[in-house]
Amino acid sequence: MAEHATFQDPRLAELDGFTVTIDAARQRADVTLDYPPYNVVSMLARDQLRLVFEALDEDASVRIIVVAGKGEHFSSGGNIKGFLEASPEHVSHLAWNIAAPTRCSKPVIAANRGYCFGVGFELSLACDFRIATETTRYALPEQKLGQIPGSGGSARLQKMVGVTRTKNIVMRSKRITGQEAYDWGIASEIVADADLEKAVDALVEELIGFSPLAQRTAKKLLNDTDDALLSTAIELEGHCYSRLRTSEDFREGVLAFHEKRAPTFVGR
Image (tube, rainbow, N blue to C red; front, side):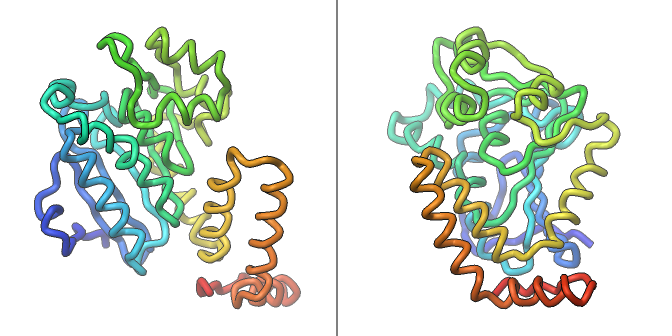
């Protein structure tokens, strides 16, 4: 049964507009944006989300993290007025905070339905998997405010879909559908709106079946080599492969394969 998480850090004593629950039996943590009706993300919430991901990364009971929005929408974006109230120094940390899911060594799934705008889109782009529905609308609307995306949105998007599509989304504040996002390689899956939670549950169960050590290694390798030369990426892949060769999980995986049984991975 999932229980509300408690954190030692006093800065997380009262979460601003989101909740965190942990289901130790399912090795799962859920970070749920909860600021009705559109789950606006405050400046404080950005700081707290970074701290939460860092804490969950250290929690041995958690294997997979899911980020979702309560209700009909993931998030309509940030607290617009908060940008004028925040100092330039504070604003300069926004991208670092929202990149916390990427830095987290564990798989992170974004469950996107309804509006997924601004920082909501950027937070999702920082996750490893994005599951969209037919109601999902992604957008980076900052041009309408005389601004640009400031939490990694345009940079991550350009890596995924190229400069032409990114210019179309960023410079026109253009909304794209969940289906377009899937067709372009932004979303990992597209499902019926009513099936979103079921699809997330299935992905969580699938990921838990793999070696946590191999998953951590794969995530870090892919992140580190995303903009590396091919020769560098292949060299790093070889070093990671060699290191996993000596792991208990690899030995267990090979034995289980030959014995025609499900492996029991321990993360070492």
